[in-house]
Length: 343
Figure 1: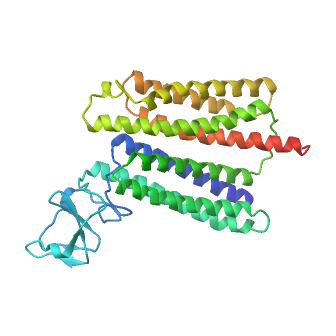
Figure 2: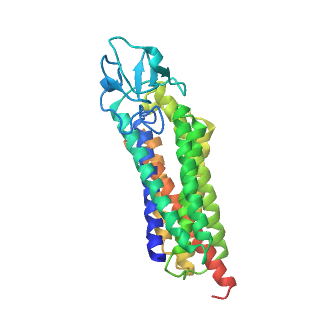
Figure 3: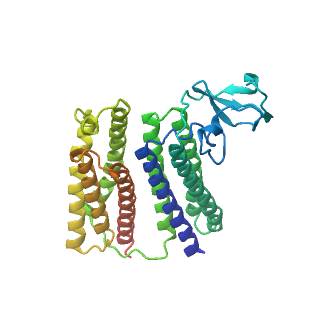
C-alpha cells in the first residue's frame, strides 16, 4: 500500500506541474481572460468554438447560466427559455464581476485546457487523500498532509476564480503562483514520508544551510519574476515594441536580474561541497542544470528580446527548481536527523 500511495503522490505532483506548465502557456498566449467567468466558460462546461454561439438569436433555446455578448457586455440567462423574435432583457441579467466581454476561440480553449488539467490534478489529490486515510493509525502526518493538499487545491481553485474576476490583477496572479509552489512543497514532503528507499546521504552543516537559503531565495525570485512579468504585460498592452519592453524597467527588474547571481553562486558551492565531501546527494547535478537553464532563459529574454517560448520556459524551470531544492533540503534535513540519532 505504501508503494501504491507513493505513486499516487508522484502522479499528483506531475499533474500539478502540468497545471503550472498550462498556466505558463496561458500567460504566454495572453489567454488569461479566454473564459471570463468561472468555473464554466461563457456559461458552458465545454466552451464554444465560434462567436455565433455567444450572440442572441431568435427562436433559440438557452439554458440558465449561459452567457451572450450584448452591447459590449455580458448577459447571463436567468432560466431556461426559448427566445422570441426580439430580445427580452428581463430574461437576462448583466454579468457584474467585471466588464471584459471579448471572445477569442484560441484564447478560450487555451484557458479551458488549463482549467481542465487543474480539475484533473484536483481529483488526483482527492483520491490521494482518500487512500491516505489507511495510514491514520500508523502515521497521522500522512493523511493530515494529504487532506491539507486537497484543501490547498480547493483554495487554489478559488484563487483562480479571483484572478479572473479581477481581470488578471498582478497581486492575485503572484498569490496564485505562490500557492502552486506551496502545494508542490507539500506533495514532495508527502512523497518523502512515503518513500520506500532509505536516506543514505551524509550531513554537512554548510551544505544544509545553503540548501535552506536557496529554497527561500528562489521563492523570492519567483515573486520578483512575476512582478517583472506584470510590467512586461503592461508594455504589451500599451503597444510598446518588443525590443523596448525592458528599455526602462522598474527597480524590481534590476533586483531580480542582479539577485540571480547569488543563488547561482550558492548552487555552485552546494555542487562543489557535495562532490568534494562525497555527501551522496545525486540530485544536485540536475538542480544545478536547472539553475543554469533559468539564468540562460532570463538572459535570452533580456538580450534577445523575448524569443518565442522563453517566458513560459523561465517560469516552469523556476517551479522545477524550487521543487528540486525543497526536495534536496528535506534530504539534507533527514541526513542531519540520522546523524543525531546515530544512524
